[in-house]
Image (cartoon, rainbow, N blue to C red; front, side, top):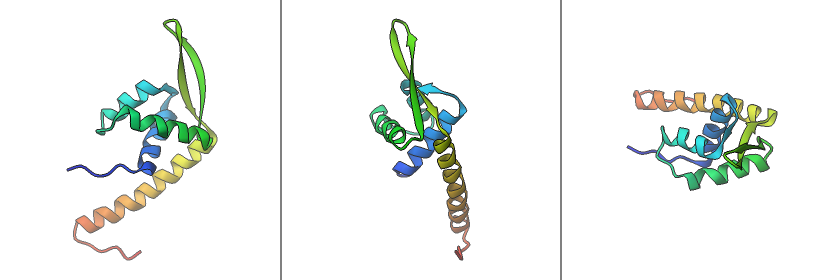
Length: 106
C-alpha cells in the first residue's frame, strides 16, 4: 500500500538526511529513494524551497573536474526538523491508536 508523501513529509525527510551529514543532491535522492518510491525531479524543488526558507545552505566542492553542490542544514533547519519530529510523534500516536481500534480525544 502506498501513502501520499506530502511536501511537509518530504521536507522532514530531506532535513533528517542532511542533518546527519552534508550531502549533494544525487546522494540525497538515492538515500531517500532507498526507502520511498520517489523521483529525483521531485526532490530538487524541495531542496530549492528549503534553501530559500533558510533551512539549508549550499557550498560547492570540486569533484572529478567539476563542482558538486553540497547541502548543509542551518540552525533554522534544525529547528524545523525538531518541529517535524514532534509533530510526527503526535500524528503517529494518533494513527496507531486509531488503527488499533481506539479513539483519539484530542
